[in-house]
Structure formats: structure tokens, C-alpha cells
Length: 258
Image 1 (tube, one colour):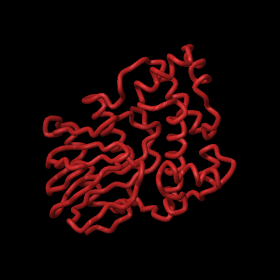
Image 2: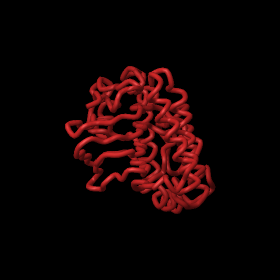
Image 3: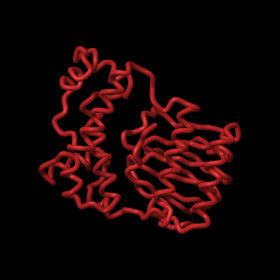
Image 4: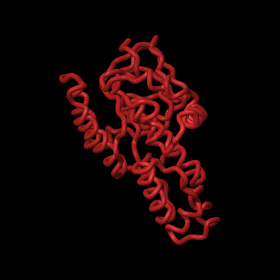
């Protein structure tokens, strides 16, 4: 999959019904359920199943305790997932073995000491899952090249100023045809996709302790005010408040264990 994990909160925990999730807009979540009763947008999360929730903005509900392995993360470039992935991994012993090994690791060691191992574990899980289901939608390979180019530009230069015309020229396609293919694959326009990556890049930096000014510059903004406005429009919260809620790698979305 070749995703770089920009930000990661992980662990194995049993939480109680009184728990309420912290605000983590835009984070992808990977859960492996051991037991308990929890719901996401009304869908029961079944024991023995692994789930990926893209940009999890849905409604969570717990009834009783809930024991699960979890990874909350910003992948970069993003996973191209339009909906929740649900796998009964008892049918996939390799994936189950990795999950069980991660659970043991996070239980025995202080999670602050195994951040690198957790990132590697998540990358392995995403690779194995990618062999089972298509994490990326099908489509013209030239759109994939454009997405890689956008990701590289955002990563290296903040991505400001990218245009659909520039991207279409890069892959030798008519601008309008390219825009059509791009929307079919990603569900959005090249411009909005680029802005979304810039915001997620900035959010990952803020969660990792960067200042608002540092995150703004990395996202291609020369003005903190313009960055704050764009960030709040995208995530529904100011960069300062988002940064203030930064959890450490051993926490659960900023919330204590119930």
C-alpha cells in the first residue's frame, strides 16, 4: 500500500459504556473486536471482525464493555475508501495472527516504547488487507499518478496552487475528461482533494506537537489567519483547539480508559 503513517494512536483496551469518543475529525480507524457490544452508525461491531472506518465522523454507541485492538491514524497518501471495511478475520489467519501479536505487544510493553513497532504493524495490516479487498477504487491509472503527484507536492511544498489543468497536462489528458475520471475515482474534484490532503497534513503535524504557524506553512499557507479559517471550515474546530486535544500514543483518543 506504501502509506506513510503520519499520526498514530494505538493500543488494546476494554472500555465501558460511559466512555465517549474524543473529537478526532478526519482520522481513519482500524479496530479488531475481541468482545463486547458497540455500534457505529447503528451497525453492530461483531467479535472476531476487523473494521476500517475511513475519516470516522459517524456516531458511536457502547452498551456495556468493549474489548478491542485499535489504531487511530492519518495515512499519507490517504486510503481511497468510500465506506466501512468489515472483515471476519477468522477466515484470514495471517491477519488474525498479526492482530493477536500486536495485542500481546501493547499489553506487555508501555506503548510509548513501541511506537515504531506499532506503525510497522499497521502498515503490515493495511498491506494484508489490501490483498483481500481493494482499498483503492478501480479506474484509469493516470488518475493514480495524479494522486501520487498531489501527495508528493503536498508533502514537499504544501501543495498550494495546484490546478486541475496542471494535473491533466501531467498525465496527458483533456482537462474536462481528467476531472471526470478524477471525480469518479475519488468522489471529489482535484482542487478539493488537494485541499483535503493539506488539511490532513496540517492536522497530523498539530497532533504531533507542531505549532499552528508550523502547520500552516507545511500546508502551503503564508497567513495563519487564512489557515485557521480553512482548517475550521474543513474540520469544524480551530487548529489551536485541535492541537490542545493531542493524545499521546498510549492514550485512547485523548480519553482515559473507563
